[in-house]
Image (cartoon, rainbow, N blue to C red; front, side, top):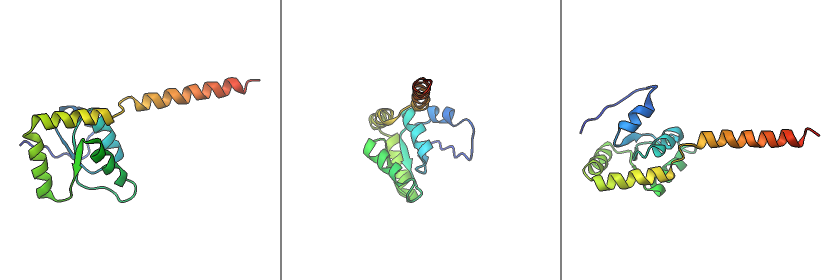
Length: 123
């Protein structure tokens, strides 16, 4: 198995599209980006409180697992990579959970609400 550990990068979307699996902590932005591109996620840690719910989203969505034990993480990821049907199923589950156009939709909604408020208050 080829593993490419990365520090901070500015071209993460390109890496995510090229990857088969993402091993990461349960950060909300990372989980959302992975789901948007259909990338199965192996979570290794989370910040108590603010990131704990992200673990549940991935587990309940069926597109990843959580473990903080390195040997278990390796075994799980290796099993995923040896089962193309499982990876495909997890990828589809991630895409189902993802919202790749969420930012556009939020901006559109804010714009529509702003226009409606301005129109209402012109009188």
